[in-house]
Length: 193
Image (tube, rainbow, N blue to C red; front, side, top):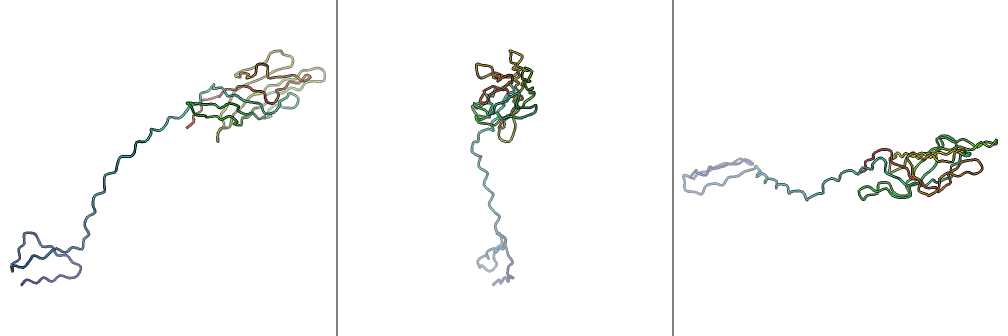
């Protein structure tokens, strides 16, 4: 009889073509090596995803309808003084609102000349500066100017949303009353996601 001594934790492999000399059954192979892992399954194709959407571009010159939130006067306001505006109609690009109604905007007094006691008429020149959209400021352009001596308004880059001139005279001072509506224009192309 063939006796095989196997030390603990050691494998013995018998080649398949080996034949026992004594007629006893061939010993089975012992192995302490774990079997090789099965190959990882092939990744499944991702579900169809929509292609990324192109950014929306708000073009320079787009109209923005605004309301002046406080009365601006040649006698009470000075050059450089800011005044609040509010967007009163949403601005939409490709079916998506990029500037919502109610957005806060800011205007600026470019020039204010007080009316004088000797009959000098007041002068007033105002502009819209920007509208706040999220964390950014979208620059606007508009200019309204009027002298009490002139019968014509100067309106550059702005359209009036009311059928009358936005300036009024109170005595000899020039003023733009609160709630006066005007249309400014976007100054530069602006990209929105």
